[in-house]
Length: 476
Image 1 (tube, helix red, strand yellow):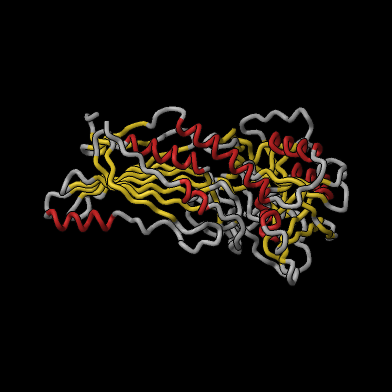
Image 2 (cartoon, helix red, strand yellow):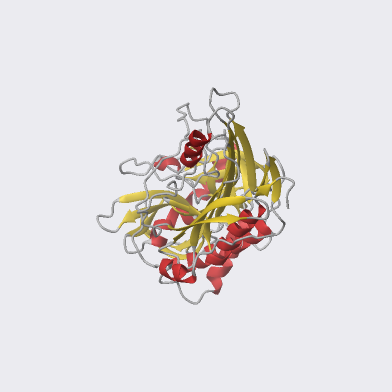
């Protein structure tokens, strides 16, 4: 029962709370899925690839460009587009210095007001670095004007901006939202790949619960540049806001449910003034997310699985998925079995930063052919303390690590805890805990947990729960 808790001193916490610092410049990376049915000619100007929407899964592979002929739009799609086109906008992020285009997305006018709904990730550069970026809108009529950011919802990837024009009333977010049925036709509108305003047809296929927050599955094409545009029913009711797609699937796209947009519009109506700096607000939203995330993760004890003579903690749920692999058929002098678990979604902060995620992995390595010295060298090589990300990442402080030899209830371990603080969001940290068993000269259990975007208390809480659950099977 002698468990030595790994601790990071309060002084270290104070040293890591470093607000400010430069933000990494996001790189534009166009996505390419099956094209939407184009209805209007592209606006004048040079064709430029937009930044892609955040991936639904971090490990998604790159896409293959599909250059097949565009299908003709149906009469229903043509009718909807003709009614909606006056309230569709392209949102462009511009560098203030030179007014060059950085990224593009879409948005739509709300009712007859001057408010526009879009995605947070479309305007994230302006929200995070207003001294560097500004924005403009371009309508289907080619007219353009300035964009003022009013509110953001980072957790649901939504934003509200104000422009110097008013809507026709086609798009509304009423108190009573439309009920959707499986297989119901939906129509997604936006400006795909900066090619011109377009409408694509697809179907509603239920609510995705693997994301920490609900999303709607839209079986239809949503290309980069359509992010922030509306997806509507055949009667023109807003069902959701285009947000992302699966890069490893065909016509699997996702929408932010209209109820989240409804809530953000109520926030705008109630606020007395526009925030001068959105970074503290974004930080507060990320802190709220991490509390809910860790509470959900630890509301029940972690499940235990056997790996050889050891027991390891995992968490399998709607939000966290686990996979296993082994090199047992490979010609190797040792056997390595692996279990990896990861949340299938993360919170988009910027093109170069996603956060609010938990992952854990275990590798059981053993050998009957290697002598003790050679196995020790192998185990030490596999213990990748240096694989903690770029030490000069401008978004984070450098890793501060502590190393101890500890003992859980049944297992002696080498344990390394590393912490990195967020420069723009004081109070948020990335935690990494790596452990290696030291009880067998020809076997090693190596485990790791990564918790990103959490408070110091919740980082310690989650790594402690993970560490306490490691042990030898059948021993207490």
